[in-house]
Amino acid sequence: GAVVSQHPSWVICKSGTSVKIECRSLDFQATTMFWYRQFPKQSLMLMATSNEGSKATYEQGVEKDKFLINHASLTLSTLTVTSAHPEDSSFYICSARVGTGDAETQYFGPGTRLLVL
Amino acid sequence: GQNIDQPTEMTATEGAIVQINCTYQTSGFNGLFWYQQHAGEAPTFLSYNVLDGLEEKGRFSSFLSRSKGYSYLLLKELQMKDSASYLCAGMDSNYQLIWGAGTKLIIKP
Image 1 (spheres, each protein chain N blue to C red):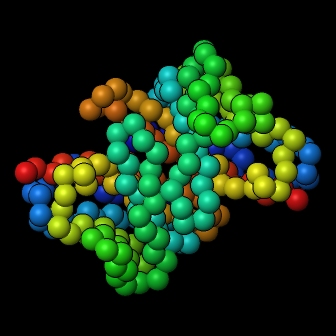
Image 2: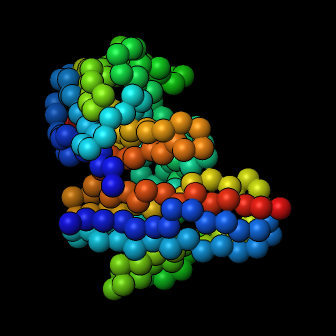
């Protein structure tokens, strides 16, 4: 089946540094990828929709200058948390979409845990 | 390897009960999640089980058997709005989520 990977799995960084998280579709191409943030035992909060070759679409309340998204190819999207602060500590999950309409399927990555000290 | 299996699609009748099964194989185990996802929306958290047994939350219940690597989501008194995809995800020893492909539930009047 379709596999989505994320790298790194865990990252611990100092406040003020930038962190890049990669999301890859390993055996399929995805023109659209999504970035979510999850707090413990809560629903996934959509941060942005990443479209290959164009600018990402950010959800209301998500700072686009803080969470930089680059979807440079059909198999890779990156999320860069710039000048990270402790409140950015969270579990970040990406997904890749294939198909459209009733045939649409999302495949989720395993997540990246970010801890900002 | 790590794997989550759940049926691709299920159909049920409004007002009835449906059980969506999920079997998992993970490297270590730190719990199992169920999410509901309507088309075009983000997944909504339904339940988290880490101990064996049944947890009931309104019309939705979730069951876990760690020895069998098995969980199910039980939906009672089905409503049309319950038509959605239901995602099963296991958390491994590294606290990574292993996702199932989702079960598309179709509710008929």
